[in-house]
View (cartoon, rainbow, N blue to C red):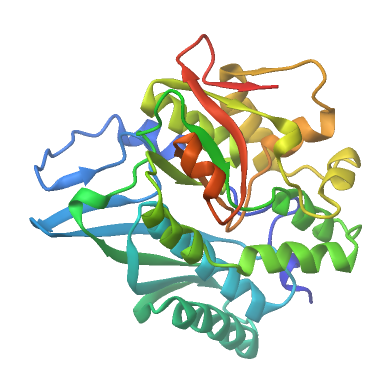
Amino acid sequence: MKLTSFAKAGGCASKLAPGLLNQVLSRIPRLTNEHVLVGFDTSDDAGVYQLTPDLALVQTVDFFTPIVDDPYTFGAIAAANALSDVWAMGGTPISALSILAFPEKGDLDTLEAILRGGGDKLKEAGCVLLGGHSVRSEEIKFGYAITGTIHPAKVKANTGAQVGDALVFTKSLGTGVITTALKQGIADPAHVDAAIASMLTLNRAAAEALDTVEAHGVTDVTGFGLMGHGREMAKGSNVTLEIEWRALSFLPGAIEYAQAGALSGGLKNNRDFAECTVTMAPDVPVAIAHLLYDPQTSGGLLISMPEKDAAAFPIGRRIGRVLERGEHSLCVK
């Protein structure tokens, strides 16, 4: 049986509903703590807790159902996806705890391959596995809780975008429609391979390159898609992000699958969540508009930085700029 058959049809590494957890958490009394540098108020990629004047912890958790058929690759992608949140904050991942839901009568060789793939990707990142927790479930789910370290003065939050900045994005879009096409049995193997290669590429190099520029705001684009995560950056920074759709890069086959209707439930949730905050030029093709909301797995970093730094940034491409706050959070032209 294919590993993706354990996942619900049309699924991908998307949050169940953008903002759902935060909506409920907002009803719970909050314990204020002066050591919390970044909490869940701004929907950032990870939380940051200061331990000493020179040291803070970066903490995140992410898990999802299989999006590819090979269990080793699935485990490795799950690790890369979880690690990305720490790098998006400017931190260094140091330890991980695995999170697993697995069928009672599932193949243990499959489980071993998932864990081996995740472990090898953690090793590549220099992050040590400390243990984890598992439960029985008919649907496989796997991921990690990652802890990293950072100097409190070097935190890269999603709330720092400044008017006049350029926007840089470090990967291509389209993992959601491609993995959905895989589950629908219509994906070209070459397109799947290209998407897998992208998802397996760690964001470490991009994060390390941040030290060479004056990065004002950073977020990684994952389950909420470019528009969803861009919305949070714009809202938290009180600015409008202008995206030039022709400057975006798309994975091979992504546009064709979007045109064919390989759209996940997560994409539709993202559109419902963010569309009211987006103004889109009339010449934006329908398929491109879909991909702007496409949930990404182990996606790239969206970075707000001065124009002079964007011109020299070694990874990704310039995709837009930061404007004064307007009627909408995002403007696609």
